[in-house]
Length: 103
Image 1: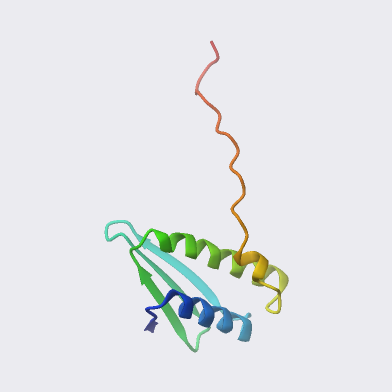
Image 2 (image 1 turned 180 degrees about the vertical axis):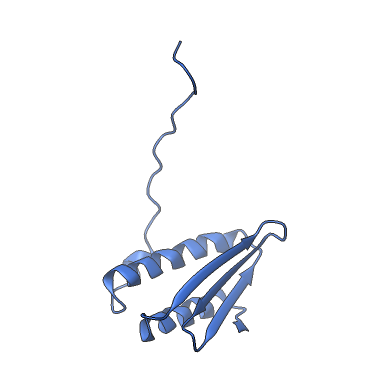
């Protein structure tokens, strides 16, 4: 297992790994609240890449990587990922106020 220090390198190598072998590639996220650490792992049974962080800004990067992997899984390994990596999050619906019976 290789921990990669640079986010950009991790993202590029994990996308290349998925495109090379989409049938056996896996992507795993693990968050330990007590340590405040997020670990991302991408493997294809031959090579394993890991990225560890405790920075909040990396959570947004992880969201982008999720969108890229969802696009690749849904549309195939040759899909264009430029729109997935620049996609803005959907607007949230307003939450319902109050609970219980109406008065």
